[in-house]
Each structure stands twice: as C-alpha cells, then as structure tokens.
Image (cartoon, rainbow, N blue to C red; front, side, top):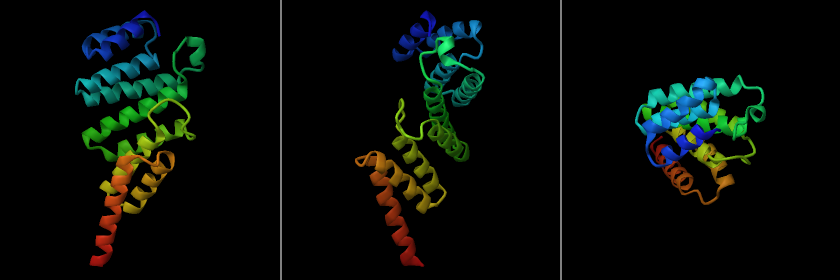
Length: 180
C-alpha cells in the first residue's frame, strides 16, 4: 500500500474510522478495485456499526482480488489467499451479527478454502471451525457442531471456547437421549 494506505491503517488503529475511510478512498481513485483498500473500508464500516455497508465492501474486495492476476506486480502488501481468508472471515462475522447464519456459514467455509493447511495469516482455522460449530449448534445439528469443534481442538487443544461448546453440546445430546 502507499502513503494513504499506511495513513489509513494508522487512523484505523487509533479508532478514527471515518478519517481512515477517507485515506482508503484516495487509493480507490487510482485503483477502484484495490482489494486491500476495499477490505479496510469494510473493516472501518464494521467498527462503525454499518454491518451491511461492511459486507458490501468485503464483497467488492473479493471481486477485486478475484479480478487481480498478480498481487506482487501491483505492489499489494498481502498475498491473495491471506486477503481472501481474512475478508471471508470478517464478512462472516458481520453476517452473524445480522442473524444471517447461512451466509455466515458459507463465508466461513470459503475462508477455510483459502488456507486449508492453516499456515497463513490470522484468523486461525481453529477460530473458523469454532464459528462453524456454533452455527451448526444453533440449527440443532450437534453432531456436526462437535465435529467442527473437534477440528478446532486438533489445531489448538487448549481452545477454551471449543472445549466449552463441545462440553455443552455433549450435555445437551445426553439430555436429549435420556428424554427419548
């Protein structure tokens, strides 16, 4: 990213999201599909509580990334799969907040596809598997939820959220079997 990108990141980290958006919009005047700038505007909108606006920018970031043949040639600071993993994850978190579990589930799955070996930038695939498990549990599919939490625990055996959610799901399943 250029000077505007670095200024935008600095403003974002200081919580000055509106001003950060202005910096990223400068980048978009030169490259309207700049996936990093679009992602950061989405992050700013999310922090400002404009979840639908954030999702719109995340979708534009995905389109921009898919339409960019070479990130290195354009001078982007992040690898394509890292950007897409992060964007799909952040977009999914916004869908969760909006109560759109199906879109969130799909987005989390797309995030995993970007980094199946869990070797790239955050979020960790463990976090993604935990989120997928929570969504499956919301739909009452405790077996699938437990499978996702087991995948999270295979990556991070000390993941407290996965451990707690799995224990609760097993407790619910046991209660259900006693009632049947």
